[in-house]
Image (cartoon, rainbow, N blue to C red; front, top):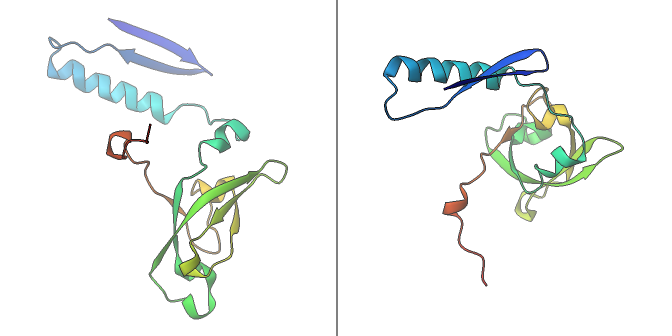
Length: 137
């Protein structure tokens, strides 16, 4: 069964998969879903979306701080800890062992669309929930 959906003048299709589908139909389904995902409208960059980034780990090349670290290839990992709605900036906080001040970055810098201090920030993938230890009851 095939369902077509019009969304923001973009045609997306979703095909329900069954065990009896042949490889050709599965390949066309993957292509269709890939096109749909690639053409989804950009999410509104507001507080509800910003909350999804709280606690996310961000990898930053140490050379972003310049000076004695300008030639460094070491990666420093920080965490998104705040969102300042009026200024539209996120705060990334680093562990004490790095001796780095918290840094503010824009949406574009956090999403890797533009560089921050000459480097592109890398968001670490979210760990699968099953790999986390259970919460104490």
